[in-house]
Length: 295
Image (cartoon, rainbow, N blue to C red; front, top):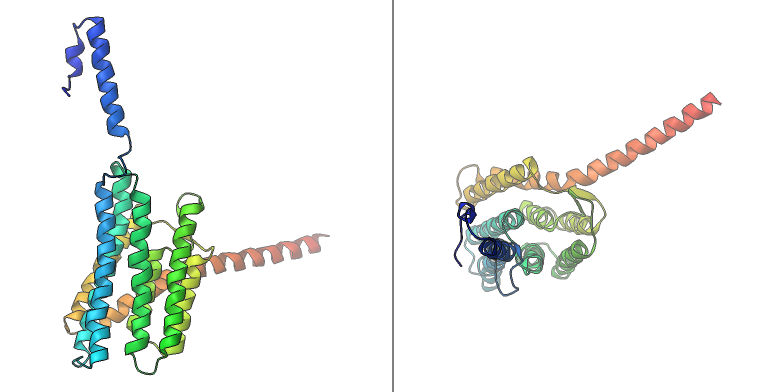
């Protein structure tokens, strides 16, 4: 279709000008129209990248942690450390793709498949992958119970499924999520496993994360400065994990710092909610006391 500059409309007869305006209006309407379901947008490719990262994380855990443990071919824990670091790095990359696909979809035209693809990719990367990580942790770590770890892993998976379903069905006020977002929940679960705490306290902490994902605690959406800070945290975490996987001096310290930072970040919102509720109750008590004294 030939695009005519607006200046060329000068001097044209009315019928020709009307036809050109009609064609331009039809072209603009076509550009603004949603893509057909078969077409993928740029944001959709980022979403698919998130799904690929989730699958590769599961593959890395299987080949570098589970299979060497079953066959007895692990060498001094180096293979398991490399597998764990690779899996966590892939999940961090998946979280980065999940952060950017929404931004790209808002800037560019989204496809009709965008929302469905996003939920399916999140289920793989932030539901199945961390649940599998917990289950494998219960298999390869000494002094653990495989059945109990599998049960807690199932609660993580079900929490993510319910969280994604509620996100699609319930409309929240702008700027907040109800319940811990799945990427944050998944990375917090992984952080707990990386710290390798005592088995039962570790499982209780993971169950607490699963509960927060389906709770009504409000978490802010990463927009503006918060989105920049989130991206910076992901980049720093990837660097720390790379140093840990490579066995560089101080790599274990960096991994522990990153894991504790993730857990602190996840616990911040519920602690703020508890603080606000306690403050409201204290304010109500003081108001009643002041009112009774006034009487």
